[in-house]
Length: 253
Image (cartoon, rainbow, N blue to C red; front, side, top):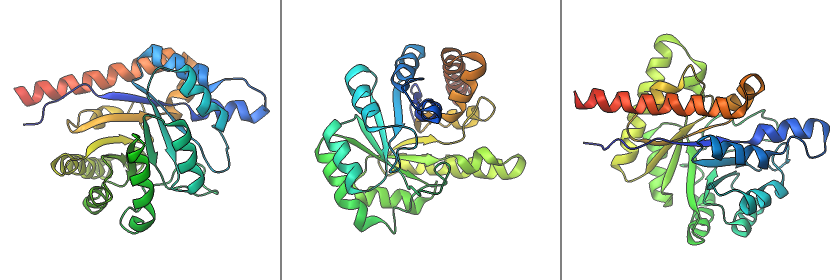
């Protein structure tokens, strides 16, 4: 039987940088947000350094590594430029994501099956440098098998479709995520999840025993406008902890 452990929360600070970049200058500072997130209960900080630098900048990554104690999860495209940056800064983790210049946000999981040959050397070199490599993928057994073949120790399941659906369709997608998370553990992968999670939809995902970490950003930064970042993170942390505890209780009953 799966042992249910504390569910980790990674807080994505990208959109603090989005607000900063809207007017230029240095305010608000995403590094300050990272420190506040850590103090509020985040287990890690996630930042996506995009090719076009639309939010997080190179110097933000440097300053996070220098000033923030919490582990940094660097989201990155599978490019030579981003690989070089990761190897220079040595974040705790690197989550390889699909990236298109025209998209507003990451639109889905990457295809690790078709991308095997291009991904293999990047995954290997990052791993050899001591960086925990994660692949952002759809909750599909074929993608999980591809992650194993690539030697990536972690996968992050895309929850965007689940977040956008409702009713029966959402329940079906939740089951797909649950099945994928269970399968991930069975093939030796650590399973994370993220994208589109909010106070209203996080509980069913947080209750999945084989999911070890959630990465949440846009919603928390948006909610911070109304309640403050500390309050938003603490409420999310509380919902996650209660979901995990309730799940443990149900399995023990």
